[in-house]
Image (tube, rainbow, N blue to C red; front, top):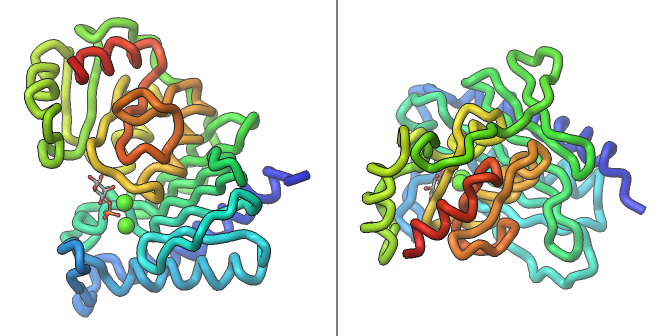
Length: 261
Ligand code: IPD
Ligand code: CA
Ligand code: CA
């Protein structure tokens, strides 16, 4: 039987180590930036954070598997727990000196459900975290954790929506543009932040058309433990569906119906 409180504690320790590395490299003049085969940038900080997290996990949880953005995905056999790591979410922000970036650490059970998540954004002085059945919390400036609760907004005309940008929407492009007129407020706050603001109740819906498991795993459990809903754009629950909608739950059906109409 897995002790999720212990796993959450370890996830915090991983986030501490990650923060130490990433903060040191943030806005440094000798930051090394390379272009990956998918034409997205990666910095020495992304790689150093993931390497360190893998090293600690290999020592602390030798039986667990590790899925990471920079160093690969093993074959998931359905028998082992696995950690899901995005060493820096918001790399383009990180390398331009915009403080909205974070290390995302998730733990999935063998069936693929995310059971622990930590999102640590040291340049925002904020860390969000959750474990299944234990609630979701945010800690500001390493202060006392505050329990998170999603908003109670019920209608799209009163809702606030956040996304990253207008790229990658494909057939849904027209629908997302039209929705901007039906919704009270839209902002492209971007990356992990859109979704954490849903968990905080500050935003009501967040959406992204193209994502990988490591972009979503940690966010998924935090939104759900705050009382919200996390699915892909087709409405399938969880973070394995290639894209994401997080909401306060009350707006989920209407939003997906409008987006998919
Ligand atoms: C990116 C962010 C962004 C999403 C991109 C991702 P990265 O992650 O999650 O919100 O729109 O598709 O690649 O590359 O900064 O870790
Ligand atoms: Ca990411
Ligand atoms: Ca990343």
